[in-house]
Length: 187
Image (cartoon, rainbow, N blue to C red; front, top):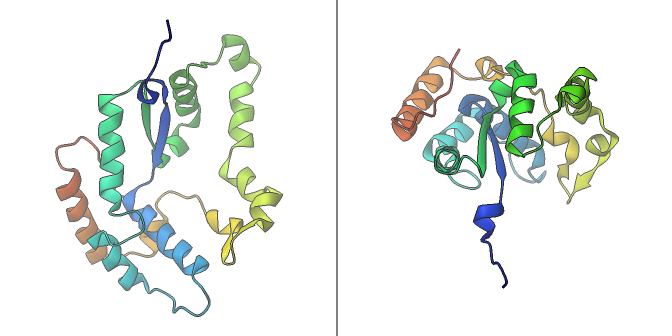
């Protein structure tokens, strides 16, 4: 007898999202770095309106986040939903959570030998940014790998967004995510 299994029952997905405010600022800077030289720079205000209207690559960010959030609630064995900010604040806890989700939990021996700490060092933002392939690698004409790594800081959006922008985006996310249980801290 041949057993057929759906990919949906075997697939495991890890979704990591960022605070929508930091997502916006990073996206705006990224788009301006990869644009062809013949195109004008996209102003913060123009980019913000596009973001608020959902007129960005791959559609409105709130649909994307909410879709994976809901899937993680409906299929917790298949979809792990993580927030970048939570990862940065408690790396050890979330690395253990990830290992358990992937059905490869750390043994007590691995923990006592410092395996978790070594993984954290090897996968840190700083370490990834300094890898030679991420400094000099390219994909296409305008896309340099180094553009994928900026600061990796939480809350850098406070250096760019006016209070009116924060208020507007907060209202949009409240409206779009309200009642879902998915929320983000605004400092």
